[in-house]
Image 1 (cartoon, rainbow, N blue to C red):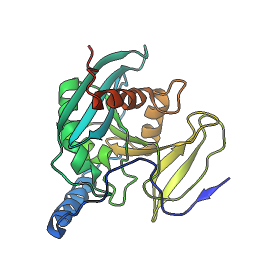
Image 2: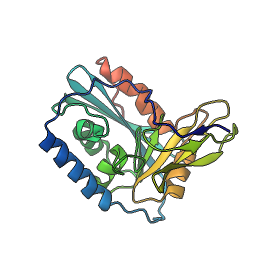
Image 3: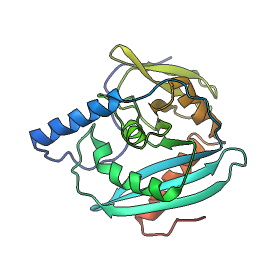
Image 4: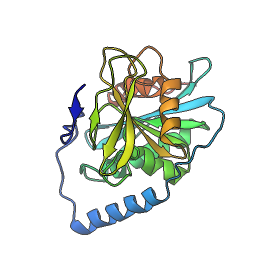
Length: 238
């Protein structure tokens, strides 16, 4: 097994770091700490019928968000909504939710009700325990799960190369996530709770929404459709 104990090199392509005034960074950090303090991590039992998958990308000076409403039992897409809006927040590592958040909130407003949301990003597996899933999850008070393609923080040992195997993601003195081998022969995904779920439930939601692909189906579809929406294609359905 390989132990990953060095800082993460993000595989996702983002804009260059932009200058942000120190007082703005201080306000952002304070907001993240305030949201992180409001996270509920106790296990909440409820029916899992419809799950939202959410992804956000950038096209020039615009942010494009897509949300997919997915039926767990039938494995069908119920509805797709997309949003394009001008970006007004500069890019800084660790504060991406301030840049993506407005478009994500708007697209979820348009999607309609769901039982849980999976975000293509981090939840508590974040330097200040406030990735996109936590930021949006707390603000909307929804069951929110982060399922990222790459690690932002923490150390871990590779899970065995068998579908369903997991190891813990450690950061400082906390277990902040799970490294989940969703498909044999592929890279694992990084699961963390965002809000209103514990780590076991977050992992169970990801497993319940995975089909034959590496990513849970709602976010896999959102990732695929946001690439089309960036090019101006109409992806809304239902």
